[in-house]
Image (cartoon, rainbow, N blue to C red; front, side, top):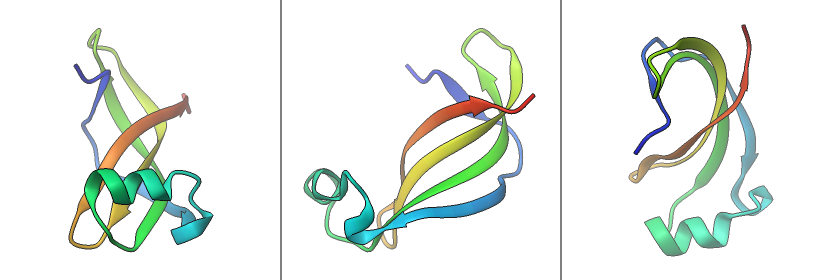
Length: 78
């Protein structure tokens, strides 16, 4: 079960790490496949499992041809 759902436009996208600078890059390649992995962060409005809507910082991994994986809510901004 997902703990949140992104319900707005993604804004303020920023790259955190690329390739071997990503701590979990070996696991990502094993689990999802080879690719140019990047770790990014964004700001978006999310709907929590309890229905509450909050503005939050979200982190995820992304690779060309594989897509976005493993979204994580890091902190609330409201």
